[in-house]
Length: 376
Figure 1 (cartoon, rainbow, N blue to C red):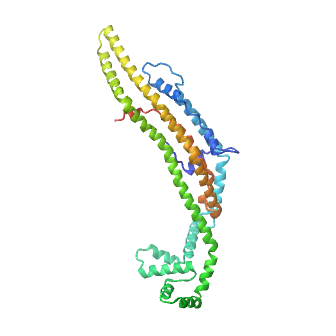
Figure 2 (cartoon, rainbow, N blue to C red):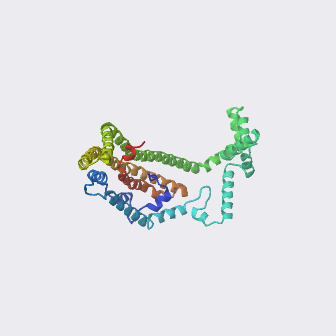
Figure 3 (cartoon, helix red, strand yellow):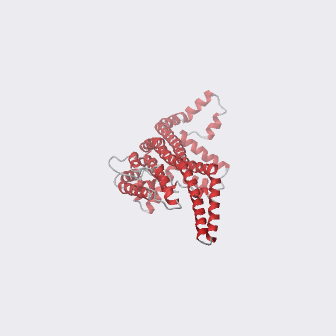
């Protein structure tokens, strides 16, 4: 089974194009599903023991020719519109922990990239109130309790504007008046107020980013659930088909197949024209009975399977696509807020639903159940 959930890289290869190209346009390029009657005729043509002629005998090959042609057209078109814009946004996005864009980093030498990584690490450590020596100690396995407490105190002081664990311990034994006097005399009141004012905008931005990321996670969960729902429709239809066969057709199928085997032995051992004709007629009758039984099964099963494929595709169109569009909007907000390359490919997200719709249509060619019906 082809991967339904494709990567962004694969999506960049497969997406459609055109001045007004939309996910709905991709869905519109998908060949129409064959009718239940056409699928049944196809099965009869390929399984009729008497080789009768049925219409649409090349139905599935014709469908796949149309499907592959649409797929080729999608690939040819996408490179002219969507992919260049996505690449431009990605190259303009900032690499996490730096003030450099992905495009700028891509042009750096190995030594420059290493220097940038070191500078980024130093910046993150400095924002926490730690040094490279502190970081080395944190990485070691022999950090003492006192050293750990000292580092925690340094981080606290950096984040609060000077307040340390020692100050908290000292103030824990003071009255409210004494604590107020201590804060004023030590300068902590002024430095902590200044820190809070300086971080006000940053805190608001961080809170907004947290809310958006949380929303993105929630949307991701909805998308996964809907993707599984669509795939599950087809899987359930196949299981229901096997159950239908077991319930209504397997017993007769076994009898017919056994009779075919017996008739074949009688035909092989027949001596004389009359015996041969009688044995051949017996074999043809058994084959016809088997074929008629299976035709009745597929007459009942094919509509169930086709409805499942159509339903799975509709789930992508009517349910998954709106959630993917919400996902795109949230990514755009995060990109505007952070300028991070991580959120630069938002334009691709809705097309994930349309391409899943396109790929699921191919499942119509897998309507036959012989492998499941007769597996060991």
